[in-house]
Amino acid sequence: MGSAVIKALDMIEARKAVYKENGISYYRPWVFLITDGAPYGEDAGIFEEALRRVHADEENKRVAFFGVGVENADMSALGRLCMRAPVKLNGLNFVDMFVWLSKSAGAVAASQVDEMVVLPPPGWASI
Image 1 (tube, rainbow, N blue to C red):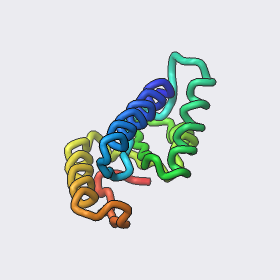
Image 2: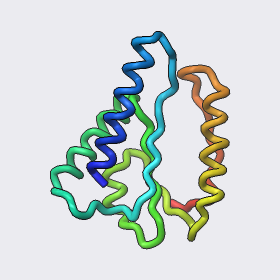
Image 3: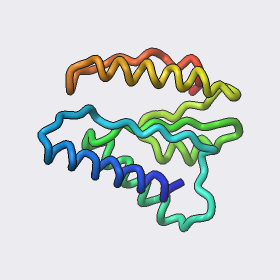
Image 4: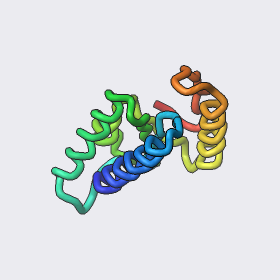
């Protein structure tokens, strides 16, 4: 999980660099992690590096990081990684989650850069 998060953050920074080079404005990218909440099969230092990167990128408004735990997820580990409270997917309600995500991204895309957008509550999840 830590390696995947680090890779995602690296890919986002590379894409933003291309946008900047070409004078293209962009919205703060979203990272949407759907997980069982715990890192497996990698050195604990990698998860700690991912945690540090997520927190630094959130604090500096480089990304918005959302954590979603599936059934039986380790919400405490996911909670350490995420700066905003992670949510737990209700059952296998992936369809509603992706519909919400699409509508939310659409609302952001229809806004002005740096405009605050209020997202609808995620009816597919619980905190």
